Length: 508
Image (cartoon, rainbow, N blue to C red; front, side):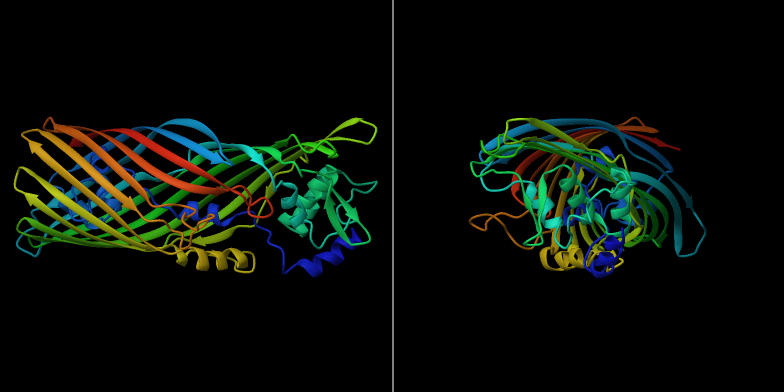
């Protein structure tokens, strides 16, 4: 333990004690269009329209456009289909999820006399801004890379005595001690050393791998994620004279993400001491956030303009991890071994702060009398402004954010045609990639490509009750990096997500 303590002084400023990667931090900051059935069927293009509970989440002035008090409840079923491609091997996985997508209400104070304020509105709305429920599987034969490089990279700066278990110590005790005093890297090196995946060479003062994959190695990577980012709007808005609307949102956020990864390797070279590897990592991220929104809408006969500002979301987050490593090996005499390193320790990392980027939404709409409407939203958001704190723990991550992420321009287009009490709707969305650069042999692909949304739906007005239905399809492609160090190969994942949504609106 004395050597561990001395080494800690040397490594204190170079080791990150947090387990979050750039991909995971970006995932928290992404905002995807979810909401009422009317909102989703029109592609979320409501910044200049209002009159919908989910529109409040785009432009807080929207609530003062309502003509009646309303309650809305939205239910949704979501299907996600992910097809991976890894070294010419493909694997398809389907996911299904039922959820309450949105719930809220708005209350109006009208006919306030002869002043300039014609209407005051108060609204409360809760809706999903990002569902993390997803799973995919990556399989293929890697001819040049193994997870042993991930563990070797994390072993730099340590020696065998730092990662050993003494007579009066236990696997769990040393693993916990290393995490609390040395951080994430020390624990990864400890797992690999105790599972006999890596060994120490005193002459070179470094670790080396016992795995031989000169002929390639079969890899199977499974990722299963559950969770949601829920946004709660507390809304206040006013109608100024006849044609101007102004609003304010104070938003709170609740976030929960549980990501389980299992990585398996088999079919090593015939002379490899290691014959199989199974690594499991479970990361749970929880937290709360706060943000504000300001917005306005102006009417000019049949033409409407909207402008809204979404502040950064200031998150307070904390992580927990659980890990397990198992290896199969064989010695020179052909005796087979199985080593399971399961510390049964939940690592609780210090609370940290994450600031997501702000956004500005510019909107326009044309109202064709009682026949229908056409609406457009343009959203600007700069993902390079994401910031994680304390900076000493996220120094490398923040540099990657500044260098690899960029500004995006999202476009949402929606239309609605009314036939007496029946409404027919359609929408389209294009969402820019938050990544600045490209990857691949031809440097022609981004980690996350631009994605497209297609939607349609219908609604019927029964008078005091409205029922709406929507169906949307989101096409997206990304390149998933297996690990942030060592085994950094990418797998292409083509995603086709669809959602059916039902909303019930009660007027009073």
